[in-house]
Length: 637
Image (cartoon, rainbow, N blue to C red; front, side, top):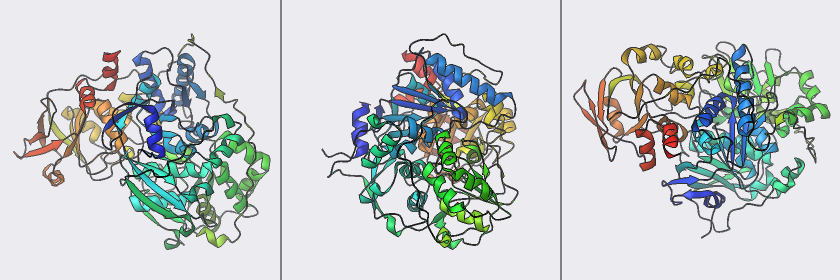
């Protein structure tokens, strides 16, 4: 049988199940990744599972999200993460070392490995031939403890690249073109596998840009071959021994196919308020801009920032523009400093930020009221930037620079000469902010500040679910809508009782009080409910407030798993038109029985019955019945 890259790596790590699309499979996980906004809960869950030392080949813990220390809370979290890493055998990347996905790509990626991360943009590592997937923190904690990772076998989609990118068109425009075709839910339960002669024209960081933002299509992951380009990247990092060639068999078959001629692409932009709202830059030229932010795990590599620096050399940003630049890693910042290109950025008027996520997750640099912010990031959901009324446009570094210079959205091709950049043959490696664990069991004392609260315990699933519809929502509800990020909320990620006060606050400020008054109930949504980040807090907080089930037309992959992991029943309408038969305030009752087959939901307010389904396998039904994955794992210990 001729296999794709994805099938080869899945088959090499397959522990349970058959590689048939839609069937549940279990994979062995080689590497894990957590970051500070989701990692504190993951570490609490790891402690609750009860292992002394992590069992995966490599477990990494990063501080890159909550680096703004406005009070003790983020610092408390950092101390907790650092000491848990020392106690249980994780490698720890200290604050200021860089964004987890970029640091992983540079210093830890190994072609052919599996990576599970508590961050939805973990597929960035697919640019180096790693089968990398995002998940909730509990799934990652389980993988650290040696448990398999369960998922539905995805459909493998071939994306054949031909040609090469024209000047002023970049990898960001490639993934925006993919999003233009798929939208934000067109690749759910699919793997996007890139192939064809155009692949070899893209560097590993450029490939990482594409696989990073593939998350916005709803894909399980995205992956490139590991080839001569990958080998050169590994050698420049001093990690040539980590390279292995991985390519699809010549006659591999795919479930779906797409073709993109790189030579025919032009600068693209995602308009507010969705990454799938893609247009040509040429169609919005002249739109006034107030802020430009360059960075994030999508576009903060050395290649991207050298292009930015060279385009700004000898130029000034427009008088009304605030330009921020966030290098992805300390290694990138070191090289920009050594080459003198950091000076080009500073002289042009850029504000240099820490090597961290920063503005991408609303951690500072919130734009002004009713303003336009151009960002090289991966998401532009309403309010995610910290300003509800701002319009965020997603663009390439080239388009960002051109627009910063002119003060309006500008086609970068108008800048004229495209710079030739010289990448180092060997990167200067400085791993002094990476703390490796001691060999064997240690007696490191875990530091728990007042912000580190115990995990809430949830009871087993009831046989009958009854309550009011607390909230009815539309399509494409994001985890930001369910539980926002930003500088005010992120420091509460270790404190479920406190963070639950922000549940659905952006879409319904009265939800918290209503949930308490009603003793919990149901939430109704449309298609693609729970798209976006992997934050399991978007399941834990509703559960803490008594939400018993979510009724939706369809769910995003990671959020669906998180709901099951915390004992919330995810239900879909058998007939989507029945969505219109349920209103906020209706009283519902559902007899679960043994949860087999379609279920009949009774609307006590209208007297009608609605057929609903869950599509869960036997293992997930057992997880649900026990009240979540943590009691399920403990029961099997």
